[in-house]
Amino acid sequence: MELSEQLKKYRKQNDLTQRELALKLNVSDKTISSWETGRTYPDISLLINLSSILDVSLDEFLKGDVTTVAKIDKDLKLKKVYKKWLIIVIAILIFVGGGFIFLSTYQYKNVTVDRFNPLLQTKIGYAALPTEETANDSDYVQVKVGNKTKKTLGSPFKHMVVTDNAFGDSMFLTFYGGLPPKDKPYAMVRHRGIYVSRINFVNWDAIPRGIRNNMYPDYAKYREMYQMWREGQKSYKGKGNDNVAFTVQTGKYD
Image (cartoon, rainbow, N blue to C red):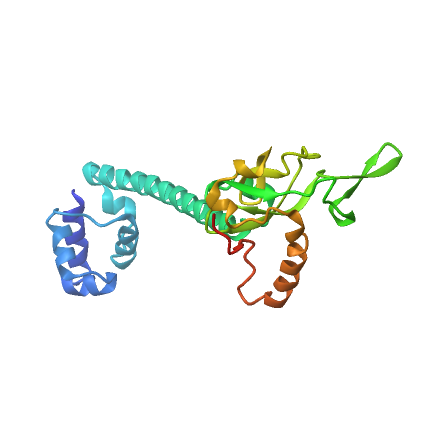
């Protein structure tokens, strides 16, 4: 006997109208009518409720209706597939969303993060460098060679002001380069965020004019900038002004 006929039979045996049965299942009486005419069929959760309400086992309920049992089995398998894919999609969205938040939060704060951060553009900037003629003690770093330490310049250059464009957009970057040639006391710096991938020593004329307009030829003008910036960051900490990017404008235009 088909499920539609079984449903009708057991509903009547329990002296229930379609509306009364519908109220017990929290569905409409039209839904009950659709089941009893065979146009649709209840899902497995409703079948379990029907079995309880009508006081008949599921085996007895579904006995002989091979077609409906096959449809229900197919629906269950599809639901498992949909559930699996839904979990996968949600996991991907969480991963992508979490990755975006992580990369947005930690950009300009970690060299490794910036190196692989797709949210950052690779830029070419220029920096004035201290040379043996212009450097003072604060420009040198102590490097251990064997059992001795010695002062060296450019290993690394720490907190250099690198200007990226004609608007004077700049940031402090640290990079290795060694001692610059006397005739090339400037660096062309290829970087992504605070990650520096390459530098080349250049002379003043090799720097694009628009960027030169917002650079000082003399490195001494930059020497105290990082310390001043650090002091400023202490004042603004927690007030939303801790951006590592800043603007340098010299007021000179060639």
